[in-house]
Image 1: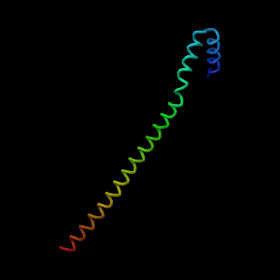
Image 2: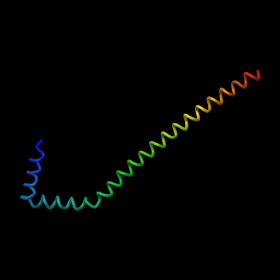
Image 3: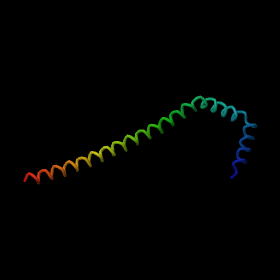
Image 4: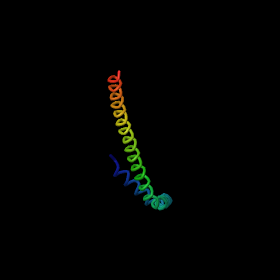
Length: 85
C-alpha cells in the first residue's frame, strides 16, 4: 500500500530538513503530557454512556412493570364492579 515507502520518504525529509524535525519534536513534546488525560476522558465518556443507557433501560423496564400492574389492577377492579352490580 505504499506505507513503507511513505515512511522512508518522511524519514529522509526529517534527516534533511532540521526545521521540520524541530517542529515535529516540539509538537510531540507538547502533546505527550496530555495523552493520559485524553485516555481518561475517553474512558470516562464510554463509562458514562454505558451507565446512562442502563439507567434508561431500567426506567423503561420499571415503567413496563408498572403498566402491567395497572392493567391487572384495572381488570381486578372491573371484575369487582361486575360482581357488585
